[in-house]
Length: 109
Image (cartoon, rainbow, N blue to C red):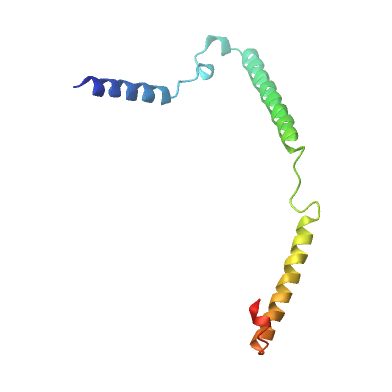
């Protein structure tokens, strides 16, 4: 085995070891600190409070992100673009009809 393949094997082993999840000790059913109902209730309340704090942080972050956002078309740009498209399409259809009718000037468009 060459030095390169030994190093490669060690790097691969380190990467695999880093990807293996570590068992959470907080959920150990044999944890002596969680044997009483009061301790479990305190733990549950602490978890609930942490979840509420994180939800508040996420709501605040999303509100900051959304300050400069606009709903597409909320400024009337969609309606104006759609009207322009419909107008251009009607002109094109008229030109096609005129071209088919023999107006060669209309065919150039």
